[in-house]
Length: 301
Image (cartoon, rainbow, N blue to C red; front, top):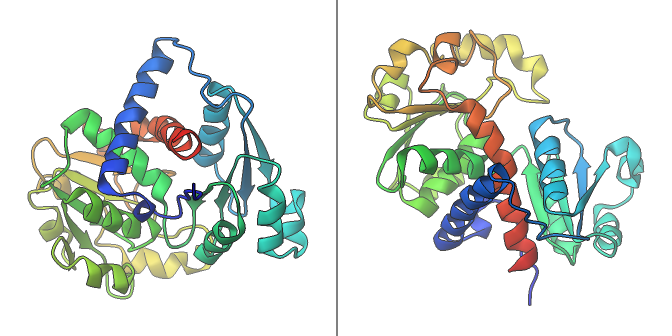
């Protein structure tokens, strides 16, 4: 049987994505009730971090521990990748020693190359192009609180970054309308927009993008590696802060999500992120449960 990878959400079909989301909620319930679920006993996960992280590292490490397995943290200083070893060689070696590889890096080509040369599943923990693990958590959060997202309107406000690209993938798989509001020059991948014209619209007015929305999501205006652009981005995104006024254009039961860390007073006001409609803390927790369901799917199916 061929190895399954998770380079983007599109490595899954709609049914498989729904299966993982449902299983994530089951695993969440099992953990809360103290039900043992060591389904990956004696399995090991190598975690390559070229970008630092709180939620990604802790959720994968805790998830493997709860599953009865183990994880190995590798920063550039801890591996030969940081000393110039070719990515294909690293993939060949690691996949003879561990059961899965998670990588959090800059270039999406790194994930693709690892997957091409690995004999075990490779998981995209984040690249500059996509953040599919976060979308699993976002979708799980919505499903748990509002039910099926099919046919709903979702709003993305701000930078057309890796999160926005992954929301476009999610719209394709789960059949919801995605309205994206970003300033000129910060659009998501054009190929994704071209492939999803029937369900994704690019707008310039955040109020228009939020109108009738059931879910409003955003992210920081300057991601890792873009710190030198911060001052310019603060000016360019000045009209794209998610505020109580902006949320008032959404549906009354709309929820707010943010992948964190957040900068209150920039991409989102404190009044929004700390309000009852904000589910960011459960969203962060769901990284743990969704990734456990993903690991189980890749290693036990």
